[in-house]
Amino acid sequence: MKNIVVTGGAGFIGSHVVRLLVKKYPEYHIINVDKLTYAGNLANLKDVEDFPNYTFVKADVCDYDRMCKLLREHEVDGIIHLAAESHVDRSIKDPFTFARTNVLGTITLLQAAKEYWQPQGWDGKRFYHISTDEVYGALEMTHPEGVRPPFSTRASSVEHHEAYGLVFFTEDMKYQPHSPYSASKASSDHFVRAFHDTYGMPSIVTNCSNNYGPYQFPEKLIPLFINNIKLRKALPVYGKGENVRDWLYVEDHARAIDLIFHEGKVADTYNIGGFNEWKNIDIIRVLIKTVDRLLGRREGEDLNLITYVTDRAGHDLRYAIDSSKLQKELGWEPSLQFEEGIEKTVRWYLDNQAWMDNVTSGDYRKYYDDMYQNH
Ligand code: NAD
Ligand code: TYD
Image (cartoon, rainbow, N blue to C red; front, top):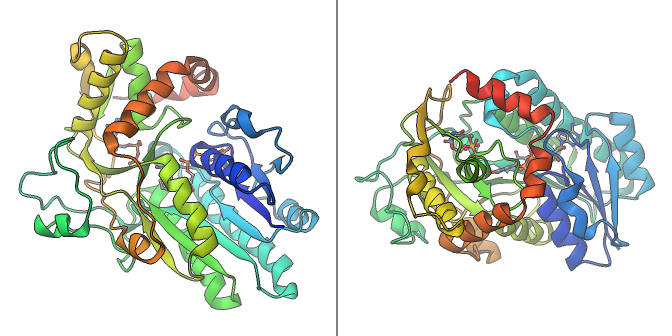
């Protein structure tokens, strides 16, 4: 029997991790610890909430006494730490909240785990910290034509990138975060490694590229734009739309987390990504065409919604992950082609308008209006 705490399990990626673990391992007890901020939503876990091996605990990872008590009460032997503030634009407006949750929250959890685990010996224990590729900073676009053309050729290997002279993030790369969000994540990664080096905490860190898929809060590019296209609202494209992100379907990330939690080497780091780089503007065009088609509109009819707005401050030009270490050492690979992933994602948001209405009501509405009023 394993008792595993997943923090941030009511958020986007966390809910997919909880769902996978609860269903796949009936012999485990999965304890979802989440503060339910604006980004956390128990509706994301409706289908597993009654499973006997699942427990939800509403708590703040910054609450040290609460974390200590919780680990003892549930005799926790594994922690998968996803709870975080995760949106770059919010971090630009309010860096303190990011330092509190992402840095102090991680230290709090590490210290609580150390106090509980160290006296018993570290054997069979694991602290798995979920981080982001954004800690590495930004890459240049050295591909002669920018990025490979969308949907025509699939860049599925390191060799492909090398052939084009593209550089991408590897595990040994120096940390150079630019945004308050990525700086807070970088700091938390350092603390996790420091707890290993200083106390022997059996920790693992993974750095994943941008995720997309169902249950993502619609302040992030893909769900925000799907909803706006449906409602025929302006699509605020930062700068020229030339920035590049590397997209991975969220269930592929959840599968990687499961694999690494069980088979990853302690004190090691793995990059997770699907070799799937896109310029924002190309993705936006695909989203418009897909939404139009699925809603029975003329494909491309809504391209006029594209609205170029003031660029994000310190906007990182390009992210691209080299996940070949994970592929070679643990045999993980992404299961979905981007075309399938986007189609599934758009369908999901169109079919789940009630979920969208629910998460975009109240406080979020005000944030959204304030945010875009400045552009
Ligand atoms: P999210 O914003 O959708 O969810 C975060 C969750 O954490 C929410 O449920 C929220 O209620 C909870 N939370 C926030 N503060 C908390 C606190 N103090 N105590 C307890 N719970 C708290 O985030 P996400 O996109 O699912 O990201 C999850 C993790 O994965 C983060 O650590 C993020 O840095 C990392 N990550 C995200 C991406 C991505 O593309 N979304 C990519 C790589 C890594
Ligand atoms: P986002 O989903 O916020 O993820 P991240 O900043 O962590 O990569 O943004 C993805 C890309 O889309 C990023 O380059 C910023 C851009 N973007 C826009 O152009 N307009 C928007 O309204 C948003 C939210 C993002």
